[in-house]
Length: 257
Length: 248
Image (cartoon, each protein chain N blue to C red):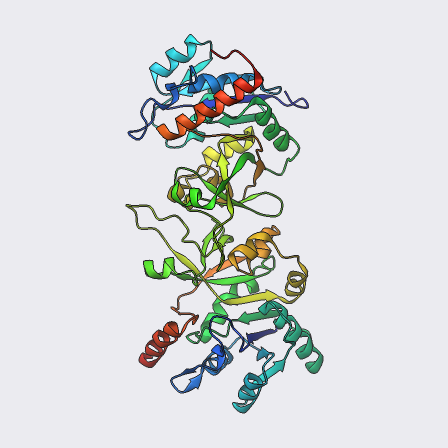
């Protein structure tokens, strides 16, 4: 609850494609990736209820084993946000804010989730908030798994792209790109609208859910996350995420295993 | 009646192609082609070239056209046009409703393109500025950094302009590719508001003037053109355009 507004967090997760099978259940620093996400979300001040939403029975069982609440959803969704919507409707309750927190973001803390929620709660004209981080141009250029975003002077997203943006005109490439982190609080009313609107044009081409809002003239506010985070799309990401978690927990001196 | 004027900003000192406006195409300076073609538009009250170079000024006068001398300190074409607008309004004791900025490096411009670009503003008072939107026909043009790619929302307002190929080409699908064509009608007061807006980071990074409008949260309506044009940025472009014009 934030200023009297209720908050539902949904963690959509699929077993993943041929590129990285079993992704959400991969072990990172002693725990399943989804368990890291679940535990991070449980540190949120504002989340009233948290659900993992998945079409896979195996994920349901493994997550229930570590105490998570899980809801089985259809396997025909083409967009993460549609899966989130199904899980949200499934609760049978009214919510003010629904967070789409992707299951492959094991390093985003409850604290940063809360900052994203605060940004949304303070801006009624914004439909959805995303976190972002900085990435070097050379890395941005080669990694098409990462979604690059360009923003206006109000920090609202103008475009999300798999290519590195912006282009530097006649200049060198020693600059950084903003990269989307898939922690996305939105108003429940915006989520309702999302599923009513047809798939948008560039949403399909870039394969980015947020473009449906942007192309329909709805505002997506970008908020910089200054903590180091790592989304996991492949084995190399996983190794890096593991190192980061290890550092984080040895620094904090907590028992994690 | 809505009064509409076209202003063509031109200067000799381009870093990539010095003397570009006076470069000869089929025996006539490029700026002459642009001027003559633009002034054939049925919608225009007046067509003028705005320049800081005596050579361009004298040439336009010599063909019976209108030219306005402007400061050589302007960094952007829109600033040059605003100065020319003020001078023309003073001379002619009037205020124009719409100012169409036409880049001097579009020698293939068709007079009807002015009408295309202005049309939505005549029927929708909320539109402050438009650009023409052209189809990109080749991968070569899509990857050319001189060609400014544009993506639009479902309302045909521009989302982003880039020198990077956008949208991202996927391996399998044919994707739609669009470019900015520099025929840019502004409502008069919006042009004056625009030149006072502070420069913005993406405008500087991409070197695209229109980005300043978008980054300040304002809208640019994109209007598809039925004409095919090729802007001249290099000597190679010029040769290509010369061939194309020779066919007409």
